[in-house]
Image (cartoon, rainbow, N blue to C red; front, top):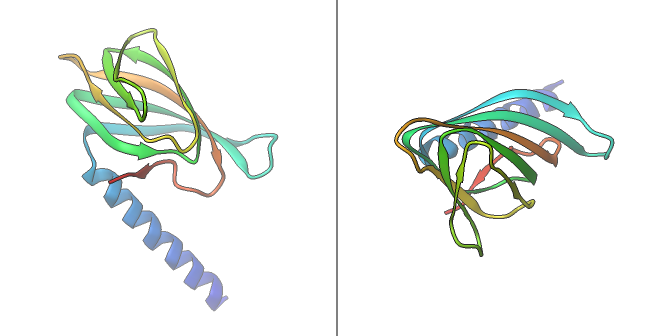
Length: 132
């Protein structure tokens, strides 16, 4: 019982630290989890989110422990994927980010921008890890 409490406290501490790191590297950005489910591959899960960028909003360089498949719902974004030139995407465009690939995004328009993002990731790992 005591070991379980220690593990739970450690997990809570790590989650808090992760959340603070994410908050420091983003401005005018919010990710809302819509659903999370196990998939047919052991140790993997699918997570679907809605990401919203205020005017001037951005998320700094980060990675995911799996693939990101996204659809731009509204506005326009500048997407920077490591090793590729920046790309400007508009409503109706899609993009794919391979597992572990460093990338960043910023609102490229004057209004808000929104994306629907689906991640197929390693279960139990943080959805995003910021990169310095």
